[in-house]
Image (tube, rainbow, N blue to C red; front, side, top):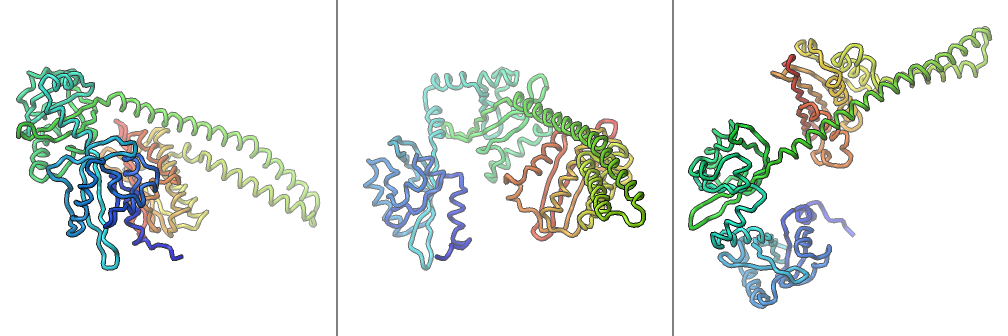
Length: 476
C-alpha cells in the first residue's frame, strides 16, 4: 500500500497540532476527522467520533433543523461564521450543553468530494462574563468586590472607571483617587508613555498585543515600587460603549521562586564543578601516579633486557602510555587546568585548538583585546567555558560542518560570545525535543547569571549561537 505523501498528510497534521477544536465532515454530515482538541472538548475517545453524524454534537431539540441547514450550506458552501446573531449550543458525550461559536470553511477539490472544516469555540467563559455584566448592579458588585484577582475597567480612551478592592490593595489607590485618570498611571516608564499609542494602534488596526491574549507585564504602585504581574484584557460593550476589563495577578512570589530556582541551579552547577575538580585531582594524583610508576618500571625492565627486549614488554610500554594519555584526556574534560591557571579566554583558545586537533574540524577562536583584558569571576568563567564546550560538541556531533568560528567581543556593558558554523543548520523543532537537553542546560546556565542565549539556524547555511553576558559593576 502506498504511503500518503507529506502534502496528503499535512492537513491531518495541522488539525492534530491545533489547539482549537476542529473537525471535517462530508456532505452527508458524517465526521471524517476530529482533532484531539475537539475530542477532549466533547469528551470522546480518540477516533470515537469518526463516521458519526455531526448532529451527535448538537442538542437533540436542534438536530432536525440543523440537518436542513447543513444541506443548504453544502448547496452553496462558503467560508462564514455559523449562526450570526443567534445563540448556538453544543452537547458533550455526557449530555451536558455549552455555548459555542462555529467557523465554517469549505474544502473542495477537482477530484475530491465536497467537505467542510468546522472550528468550534467553547465560549462558556465569555458567556458567563456577558451574563455577569447584564446582571443587576448588586450581583455585579458582589462578584467585582469579592474577586481574588485585581480587576480594572477602562474605556476606549484608556480612562480608568473601576478598580475592585483587590486592585486597590494591589496598587495602593482608592477607586475614587484614580477614576477619570489614564490607566498608564499604574505603569512604570517607558510603558507609561507608550500606552496610549498601544491602545490607539489596537483600536485602529485590531492588532492584538495584550488584549485578548494575556502576557506578563510590569505594574507600578502608588509608592513608586514596580512589580511583575500577569495581565489578561477582555474587550466588551456595555450600554453601547466599548470597554476593556483587565484581570491582574501579582506574580512577585512566583518570580521570586523562579529566581530562587535559578540560583539553586547555579549553586548545583557550582557543586558539580567542584566535584569535577576534586575527581580530576584524585585521578591525577592517584591513578596518574600509579600509571607513571608502572611505565617507569616497564622502562627499567626494557633497559635491563638489553638490545632485544621481550616484545610483550614493548607492547605493555605502549599500553601504559595510552592509559596515561587517556587519563590526561579525562582530567581535561572534567576540569581543564588552563581554565584555572590562565583564565577563561586562554581556555577558550586552548579548547578550540583541542577540538581542531582531535576532530580535524577547522576551529578558529578570536578574543577581542577589550575582552581579553577582562577578568571574570570563577563562576562566570566556568559558565562561559561550559557553554562553549557544549556548543562545540554539538557542532562536532550534529552539524556536519567543516568550519566553526568562536569569537568574544564587548557589547556595551556585556560580553558577547558568538559560535558560528557552516554546517547543515539546526532545525527549530530540534530545539524543543527531548534530545536537546544540552541546549536547555546552556539556557539555564546563562539565565543563572542574567545572560541571554539565542540559537538560530538556516538550512544548509549553518547555526549561530550568541550568548550575551552582562558584566558586573566594575567591568561594565
